[in-house]
Length: 79
Image 1: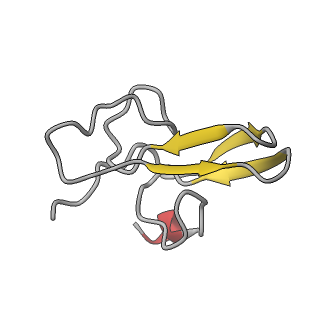
Image 2: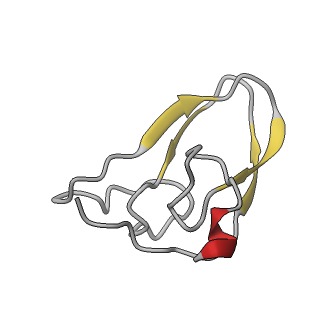
């Protein structure tokens, strides 16, 4: 499997809304970072889809190498 493109070497701060579904870009190709816009088509990548349990601020991974996707785990500091 190919490595994802690093969209940015820092997290994306977002406000997640309770009950809303989200699709985090795992390939790094989306022009709607950190969310999926379908740019992964033709690759082995798929978005991480989830529904927010609560309304809260969150930091979504921008480097696409997190071990806890879609959330940032700080691995960008090692890239």
